[in-house]
Length: 337
Image (cartoon, rainbow, N blue to C red; front, top):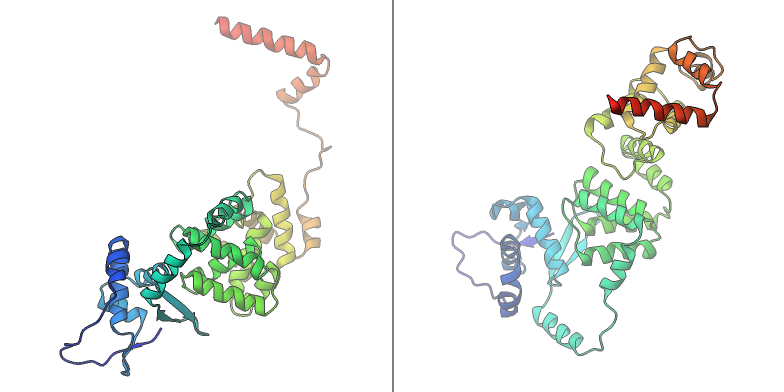
């Protein structure tokens, strides 16, 4: 985003703001958003070499950078500005005419009402995968996405042939790895993936792997464990990386450990880690080593004699009806005490 302004000791110029902004938009907007709009609007036509950026806006207005980003998202949703994404991920701001906005809205009010987009949004939100996607997106955006943003995000599914899981991955990648909390930045990434012909999670992971292999590792593990819709802690991420970097294990051994989570109700990263840690202590390095060294006890193995086994053996001498009657008798005795 580029604004230029000449530095002078005293600025005695004036900035004309349309009354529509003051009457209709300013009263209902967040005060910080108004400050960002007006301060940048003042510099919109400056031709000096001084460049105004979001960082400078945040400093001069005593705001956090995220407040400035949210302000531009808000004014774009309101139809007062347009963002133009640059190749480096930054964006420029174009202020739109409020008179044109007013005339357009008058024209729209005279049209025959069509089915509200909200109806379509409500219908889409009935899908479990769509709800899960927006839950993730809201987490990564650090706020609840607006209905307008939700409608735009949903349009990407058909427009760019991206499934909900791929869109959620795009938001995670942009916010967690690139530090860009912006729907428009995510859109630019989605478009770049589309242009490259990436149509599956695996293809996207391979593309990201070129610059960030550890990020891809984490997502693969979570997907295989069925935990792709759960946030992971930093210690858990460190555990995953230790399997590769410290233990020297590859996908084959890690996959074998993950398969064993099918035996428990709630698979977890810690459970997989306990298996791999045990294998490392046993000197297991290949799948063949697992078969030879990590032998599971046979179901038919001889059991140690104990009172429970004696009871189990004795119980086989009774029918199920007789055992039930015995249990009822015991319960009655306990109640009478």
